Image (cartoon, rainbow, N blue to C red; front, side, top):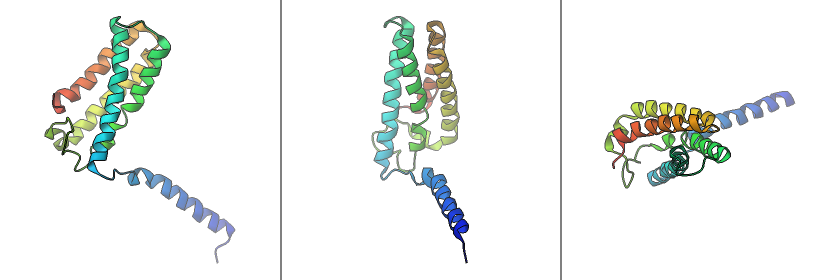
Length: 152
């Protein structure tokens, strides 16, 4: 017979198992949903990179708080699209070259580089000189993937 402690431990194990399995269950209902998801993440990221680039170029006044806000958004968004390169999401209006889906290990490496640079962007955003330098490095990380895998 199982006592209250056993039931509590069993329930805790069930909840822990469900929590750990949640990312695996978070799949897209249709490939089109995955495409929309990753395009939305890239759109938000590009918008905020444009804001930072304008500050870095002197086309927009430097505002440390606004720069830090945009940098944090970019850093968060840069982590999202990669899980949406799922089977079947290579069809339709994606903007991705077919080679991307044949080279997902390389895409993962490029995404890790981007994520490293966006983390540095957050740290640099409070200082205009540091921001200028890091916007260039972050942009280069974006461009590395675009040059290989994005249809222009």
